Image (cartoon, rainbow, N blue to C red):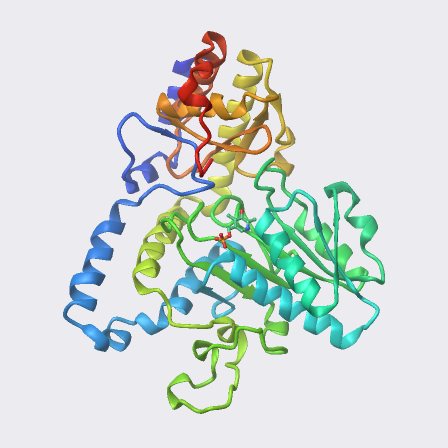
Length: 415
Ligand SMILES: *Cc1c(COP(=O)(O)O)cnc(C)c1O
């Protein structure tokens, strides 16, 4: 494949125009939208409007007049369209970690109420650490045991001791994607509930929580949804479960009537009870701009079209690097059906400095300990020529030993 071939793919790309929604610095190849999505062009003006008009002039009236109070639900309804759930089933709130705490706690209550012998929370050893930490904390408090396994061993652990299967749909480090339908079904056949973390799925791959039999889900606003650093996250509970138990963070925004100011907690019907405190309006305004960049693909084929482009990008990048950098080991699945929207390579010891050298050249990916070079492909704004150029930069950095420079070997706090 030549660079001209890549340019021809961009010229034929039906989604190419979506890139103009973003404010990307000139010359930068950004392959880290799986960690922090790019700034949408609309965001700065929208946040400024919220600050100067809605806050500055509207003041407290804006909770009603500007619809601030409805933002968790309104944004939730937009994200619902991307993950295959109905209106008023999903809300935006808090962080992914906090939402996971809520749904895992609710799921454990549901299971515990039905079956005292079910004592295990089952997850993947390579799940994102915050998910495992939250599970460890809850397991310790509520008398459950966290059992960790490799992906292929998970079905074998689904037995009468299984309470909750808690998984991240697309692995943050390898990009490997679970079969949501098959694992949800296996969990249910064993009598367990299943929680899906969609941090690397929402806005990246088609998700159909309803069709695929999920019980609960959480997801992240600042990755493929382009909501900005620390953007609020989202939470979904199956409508059949949402009203069954309190989630433990019973704040006033989850109350059936917060402005009656009664001393007793009475949970709202449905998913609204998964809200806790006052929504962060400025962050929500930015998140809405980000979600809108993904919804803008709907007339062009939506998530299915984005997925087709993402697979074409990751396939091409993986093939190019395999040819030009044989010393790197592909750690993402080659099978399209098992690969999310990222491509990762391992190389003993030199992963970190190689990535630093790439970043200095304006090719931004990231490094995940112990040895993974991670490249995320957000099809809304990454072009085929970017993938081609990134592969060529990687080849050069490895070939000329640039990564050996001392400044690239100095570890920073955030990798
Ligand atoms: C990014 C990510 C998170 C982030 O959680 P925060 O609470 O936003 O810090 C959680 N889980 C997974 C799987 C992630 O990839």
